[in-house]
Image 1 (cartoon, rainbow, N blue to C red):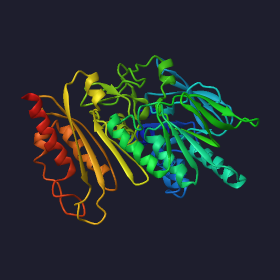
Image 2: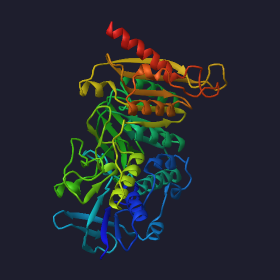
Image 3: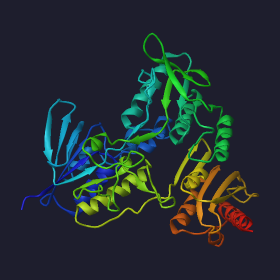
Image 4: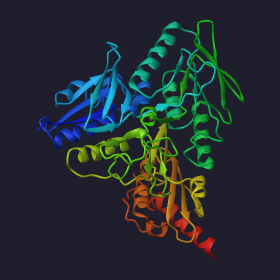
Length: 463
């Protein structure tokens, strides 16, 4: 019997995790695997790019988990610098373009994995494609930005960076630019930085950025990138004013890369991502799977699909897909929306719903915010930590948690993520047996203090 052929579109986290897991379960005599990657690298940590740019990670290759040669050594026919340009669902084939040779050809498949990832949001504004304007989605992007920074350093003169957007990518890149010795301005169209937080918690991030010497301008939607006679970016024009720039970094966010799938008629959701079932199979298509940043996933708290671009989910999707393609079994039930970040020594974390998310799905809720420290107050190094908790009115079911604080704060959000996944109430949380010692926590952990205060808010709202 001839081997089945699995075709994988995309050579990063989801795609190559799927290919590798399928290969573990089926040898090359039973399953031929052909993977296409349009870039120069495979299986790398895009989340690590800001830390490479900032110098925390010394070498680009430190971000690469597995090279093309290593994948090929596992009997995966990995074709680099080759972009899939067309998908013929009915004919079960894909059209690929070799970017080096210019050759285009069709390849048939029995099973297909779509792992095309996400693309940076780049508004169609004047000057947005100018030299000196950089996204940071791929290793190629990161290398291009570092090359620009080195050219500015060697050329002397002012070194001013404008970061467009104040989400996770934006604040991480602001830190990276600071570490490279740049004067940094962050322009943000929102009310406060970190729109993934409620505005009251985002204000804490704004204050911390100010303390680091970053100029943060809110309510400043970009309208134009100014360029000089050489075509390079020289400034950023916003509704709030104009800011000079020797380099512009885009931290506006990403959107699912689903153009290929859309053109083939595959189903997409309200956020533009492919829709799959629990096995990560594309809805309505028995032999097509999708995973990573190009899909939408179920929000277990809100009960709706959402788009979350994170390597943790992408790798899990790949494991599930590879298991199912390889004859095993796996499912991906959904997410609660956990994310962490930092800017210098400030840590930022969230999980579950924000207030506006709860309102959007028709939930009534109460909130509580507490100030504490991440260690016992008398222990050396104790620093402030703020926890905001959201719970459903009457039932007290936990809906979301946001944390802003110093070293040792962010990973506490994992306690809340587990509580959300388990459907716990805030009253049940108050009895959690969390670890305690003065170097790690006050005698009442800040998450438990927030839970106690939220219980009181629930009871008060019901009286």
